Length: 315
Image (tube, rainbow, N blue to C red):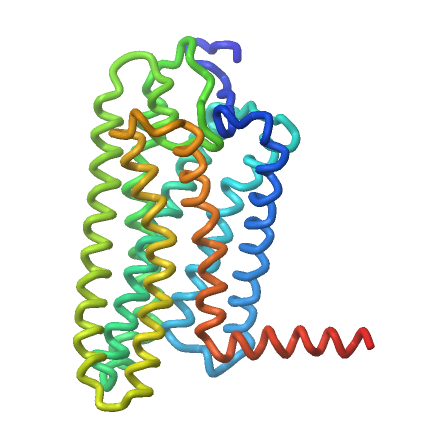
């Protein structure tokens, strides 16, 4: 905690979940479970897509990108959380905190971009199926992925740089389980208006723009689906849309709650706020492979065959 030449503190103290410190040991169990399920589920999705040549299609390439992003996002938060909850390792180096902040928010914006790409994929597949192969080529999928990643890095890079310029004299206790941007900014001594405005602009622009594109895609999809003459084709298309909507809600709902609570929810208990902020980062990466695994016959069959093969091996 000693200061350096610029009067900056050397490290922060992450509380975890304020008010629930006595239950940290127990809270660590579901966090660990979500962490393990995320790594396991997303690894199965990636392995299945790689092994099944029939899944070498844009939709499943996007699913693999989502799976890799989810694993990185979970690792960037869950490991430190478990250290706090189980080993009382609350301290985090100042630069390590900024690094964690950068990766968490970059990966969150990347997640949003992938959800937009998957909505676009379904729009092309259902609304203009004859042009699907010519529009969503492998190079196009790679370009979409790189554009999403570039946008995320460019939008978030100023955040740690703007935080770095702030002075931290005495406040070093962050009432959070990880280095969230606004939680770190609130610790600063002096004027933080630029940081707050930039944070709000990034969050609102990404959310409004991406949700707008997703909503537009699904409105067009639903219009096309209800014009289909085949009942089975209509059911299949609606089933895919419902699966996608589940993952979108699992990601955006707690994210918006956490964002709005930081700025307007003064009456929301800190413990509730932090729990939603944790769910925002851990639940969606766990839900995604489960939802897509259930909806994708090839992934479902591969998992079932592996399970029964291992059972036969035992006997």
